[in-house]
Structures are given as structure tokens and as C-alpha cells.
View (cartoon, one colour):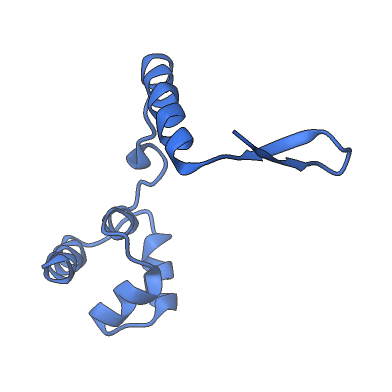
Length: 102
């Protein structure tokens, strides 16, 4: 197998490009090791705002959510940076996201 190596500025190997089939074989092995040794990443450990959390879980950008809510992206940014968000707004966002996913 011929692997392409990508070197750093200092000339040392930094990355390796390999065939997709090899990647999939190695990925399974790596995932097995990581599942045994590491805690899985949980977005809720890092994002406390319910609007931001719902948007991220729905794979939406702030701009996309803003479009669905008929507001500006700046408004979405503002509410995602608030410590408290009204229940009414949370329900509205959940409804919009549910309809978006449908």
C-alpha cells in the first residue's frame, strides 16, 4: 500500500493519507479503544442555553433558525447568550425545529 505523507514545517510526518477501506478498518479499532478509555462528548456539558442546545442538536445554524423564526441572526445570538430564556420562546423554537425536521 502506498501512503501519502504530509510533513510539518519542521519536516516531520504530521498526517498520512490512506485508502478509505483502510481508514474504515482502522476507525473501528480506534473507536473500540476510545469507547473503552474515554468519556463520550456530551454537548450539554458545554452548552447550557436551551435554545442553542436545541439548535445545535437539530444541526441548524443561527441564520437558519432565525429564518424559520422570522427574526435576525443577531437576535438568535442574543438569546443564545442569555442565562435565562422564557418557556414560551423555548416552546416556539422546539415547534419550529420539529417542523423543520419533518
